[in-house]
Length: 457
Image (cartoon, rainbow, N blue to C red; front, top):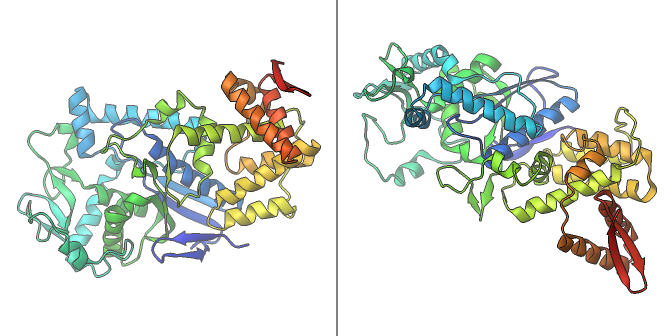
């Protein structure tokens, strides 16, 4: 089955064929390094880590660029609050992000450009836009993009300029010719620190946020590349503005496919630092192991929004333990995946269908049930090898199960009750699976006429 990916630009699932045979060029918008990364950032990073991994499974050479925004109003404010240089703040936050993502099994991209290292390329693109009449200098020293002069504005998000204008709530400020215009180059303010200021033909200042990605993507991947990714909240205005800048400068749409991950919500509201309803990755890892967090985020399709909750994480942890229990005690050999094998073929078809992880994970549980029932080495080996493409089930099962042995008496009673119900429903595979799961956690069950009791194994 050919790989098919949902393209936000066309609003359809399309067959994927890279521009350059066997080579995929992929750009994903990274984080702004003023604070620790939160679990919503992990959602995005793991979604595109999944895509990166699967493209490599399919045999493609992948050039993956994930940028770092290291100059920004929030960064400047935080550096001033801490009384440290901007570079020190962003370097510290980048190192913390790497530590968190490494723990979550997120592979490093091919290139991780910092915005401050590509200011000359940004200025060159701004000058091109100005020469084409798409950018203008305003009275306050900023350089702005003239949105109405780009005919295709709104094609990614589906927003029309007239609709956007009808919703205006503010007057034209700061020398903009139109409220929809956005800044390409921001003139420096006297109170800003010296390390936030860059020299240019437009005077001292710094680049706007949107121009960063256009310039870095073009510099590292070319004027047109295969796939551009990011969170669903970036469709407008960030990615819409990227298209206007890149296509305005080069005459080419920057990406053939635009992919957006659904957002992680709290009580149906987007998790974000601005709303204060977020949890850092490190806070969550104090209560749940990193692989459980990764598995929790992978079980939902990458384009679907979903809620963050302890109950969902608890369920993911229990599910992951069931998979590890199926591998426990089985001597699994190293071997290549036989993609002609029926379950492997189903797994591949699900992943080729716009990276359908819920379908792929269902195959893992089918194999786990078979391994539990028959203790089949082949089923266990295939389970482990297919899970590896998702970045899970690569620890030693006994070590993982012992490390996560946090069952209290209430939880044990709940698992016994679930097992009793399974036995009554004649679902003996599930009943045995629960017995094995508890045994792996040091809990041995004893059945008798009066019921089931447990002792520490």
